Every structure is written in structure tokens, then in C-alpha cells.
Length: 246
Ligand code: ADP
Ligand code: 5GP
Image (cartoon, rainbow, N blue to C red):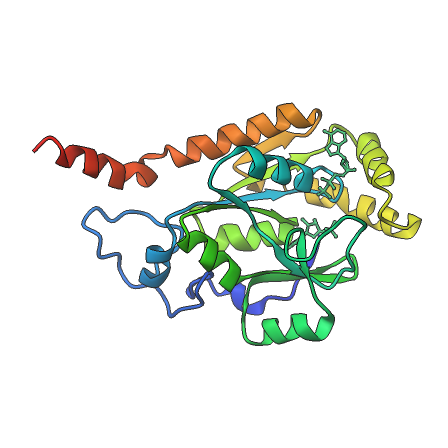
């Protein structure tokens, strides 16, 4: 799992999305719980945040991509990385591929929600990107390592987290090598971390076994749809409907 290099994210008092000052009491009469209690962010967070986490090769990005294609209003969180693109990966779609200097410049101005160094590369999700998507009313699905998931959970209690488990160590090894994107040494490093990442399963809201992609995607979709129907997220709708009964 990655070593966190986003120091400020540990300070839960500051808003993770907008990096604003510590939270003020919620002025809303119904004291609606929001992902972040900071008024600025609360206004900017009409959507929800979903985190898919788990070892490399478990199928997080395959699942996230499929879900974005089948769930309306769901955007894939495009992180920045210093890792070079794999064949077929597109800048701005899979990641924003940047060099170390560009990454560190964003980090220096506290532009990342959280960031980690793992497998010799840096990864971070831009606050600006997230703010824009949430302000546009979209839900966001993130593909993060377990360190990132922990950071997001701590700072955004409204985030829904799911750990993606491969059916077995053998199958994880097969999938990683069939992806063909890592050298034997890199593959061993990724497999070596898998056990420690999976051992964090008690921290997650949901555990999804990615045995069969369609089935696993339906399960995550059910989680997303159920979260959208939560009372806290439907209060405004309920009020609007109530108004029509006056
Ligand atoms: P991650 O994003 O967790 O690193 P990927 O989504 O890249 O994992 O998946 C790793 C490899 O396993 C890819 O080649 C992908 O096509 C394959 N894969 C993903 N899910 C399944 C599945 N349910 N069954 C078989 N292969 C899968
Ligand atoms: P990969 O190189 O296979 O695309 O990603 C390596 C690991 O980095 C994966 O576990 C992936 O979930 C994680 N990752 C990708 N983007 C981010 C990010 O912005 N933050 C964190 N914490 N992890 C990320």
C-alpha cells in the first residue's frame, strides 16, 4: 500500500475538498449531514463520493469504467500520476500523466485531496477536479489504494467505500500477469502488497468479490443506487414534494 505524501489531508479539521478553514456549524434547519461540514463544500457537494479500493489487479479500474458507462451521473475520478501511461491509456481519461516536477508543484500548493507514493510512482486526486465534478451535480467513483481510501474516509465521512477482492491469490496473479503491463519485478511487488491491503477489509462499508465482472459490477451499482436513495440525500426532494401538498 502507498505511503501517504499528502500531509495536510491528515488534518481532518480542514475541508478536504476545498481546503477551507475548519468547519462552522451547519446552518441548515434540519442539520443535514454532508460529506464535509464546511459550508463552502457543503454547497458544492450535491453528489456523492464512492471509493473502490483493493490490491492492484483486483479489477478496480475495470469495475469503475463499467459503472461509469452504466450508471447515469457517475464520473470516474481522474487522478494525477507520475507513472508512464500503459498502452491504451489516455491522458485526462485514465489519469492526468505528469512528471514529478508538475506533480510536486500541485502538491506544494496543497492541490491534492490526498496523495501517495506507491510502486515507485506518485498518485493524487486533485481537489479542483473533484470540486468541479461535485459542483456539476455528479457522483464520483474513485479508484484508490487502501491508504487513499483511509484518508478519504477520515476526511469525508459521507464517502461510501468498497474493497474489491480477487477470488484468490492465484487468480490475482493470473490477472496481473495477463494484463501484461508490469515487469516481473513490478508484478512481484504488486502481489506482495496484496495481502496487507486485503487485510484492511474491516475498514470498508462493502466487500465486493470480483469473481465475474458483470456480477461484481451489478453489486457495486446496487450500492451506488442505494446510497443515492438514502434519506439524507433525498431530503430536498421530500421537502419539494411536501410543498406540493400545501
Ligand atoms: P486494478 O484496476 O484493480 O489494478 P484492472 O481493472 O486493471 O485491476 O484488472 C486487472 C486485469 O484483470 C485486467 O487485465 C482486467 O481485464 C482483468 N479482470 C478484471 N476483472 C476481471 C474478472 N472479473 N475476471 C477476469 N479478468 C478480470
Ligand atoms: P496503477 O499504477 O495500477 O494504475 O495504480 C496503482 C495503485 O494506485 C492502485 O492501487 C490505484 O488504486 C492507486 N491509485 C490510483 N490513483 C490514486 C490516487 O489518486 N490516490 C491514491 N491513494 N491511490 C491511487
